[in-house]
Image (tube, rainbow over the protein chains, first blue to last red):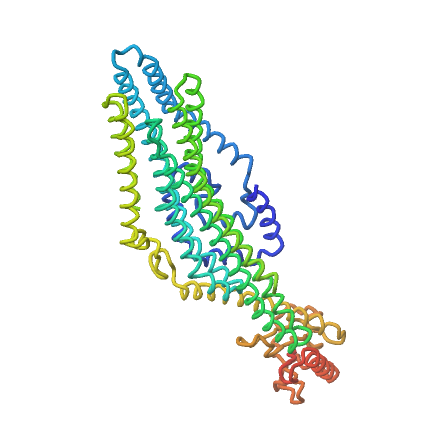
Length: 379
Length: 212
């Protein structure tokens, strides 16, 4: 929706002041981003309106490429159903094992010793849990990979955006942002990948283990680990956004002050035509700003596409677990149902963690794009 | 995270062992004791992990968080500033070009207000450092030349340019065949140059009128 709201503005702006856009785009170094785009999965490349990043920026700036939210939504929906079908085997396995478990539970009384049935039930439960943990581990791995990919893409996109910020006069902002933005993006990615996601995984494992016996529970420890993961994520997000916002405003004001002093000197000491040069420069800077905004939009689009497929996979997996839990509950096996439901909840947490990475990186791009706009607006 | 991983592994093993022992042992008070012993084992495992964290230090356990300011993925600020300034210079050059073109049109419009002269072209040269106007050149058709053109002789006319300097010393080339401006034109050109110099707040020498 946000992308759709952006696109008419860029097209309109291009018609108003498209001063040397092709030449400026040609001057930009986008080799690193292009390499990353080339390395992306085929389905992501297919979803992009243009696989050449420069052409994508040019097309978006000139309004030749317009993003169709309806088409994107349809693609997401198609993928969603494909994932549901792909995960139906997992659902089948889980349900069948849970039914076996339930039958064994009911047959416990038929054995001479109750423990025989209990043992068989535990073995079936462990098989079910090993299947569940296997696919949960895959989801965690998927989350870690996508966080890694997003961080690498951001590391390629940020220098380009900062270069364009310098070109529109945001030298102070770029200098203030430079070390902080790279460090925060990298640290945020590392913390999510190496601390938050493993914590969620450990919490899920302890949750499963708690389901083995009603008399020996470690669910509080699982809750503690999950709480720590969520708390850490919330704390980091707050610090991250706070630092970005404060630095952004301070930098923009500093840059506009420098520009206004120079403009005042030109306008005052060269009567009549003094303003003409600064007006001409302003028009050119606005076309650079347009390119910067378009690079930002193209970047956000690619980040969204990098995240979309894995996020869909994770959320579908969570749905499958929750569905299995819901289907099994009437059969009478409360422990297994709770375990599957718990795994579904943990997967939703994984989804939230990965989506938070995407959201915060989107905010970084938005702040950098907005910063350029504020800098030029304050001119 | 290795410590935490170890702790979780230990807890899982203890819980599985507890469940097995629960099944193996006969029912009665023994089960309660086993549960307590297993619980104590978990407490020991947690304390061991806590002691390990205190001993090593949390920062050592998560070394990747300490990201260096310059490293893989971090582009030096100097490179970004250099690339940005390069783009900025391209922008400035484009703006200078647009500014010069705009000024030339403005000068030509002002010059054409004087109906006694046929203004053909105007050129503005800017100072590269300060972007101030360094010279204005107005090209005017001399009346004689204009008449020759009007008559349409069909042959190329060898006309040499005539320059009128507002400072008084008109740089009129000697022996310009058929293109010499009339005294009235010279006077009008001088007046126009003075007006333009005053308008743009320039020294008189920076505005030049050339007859063709």
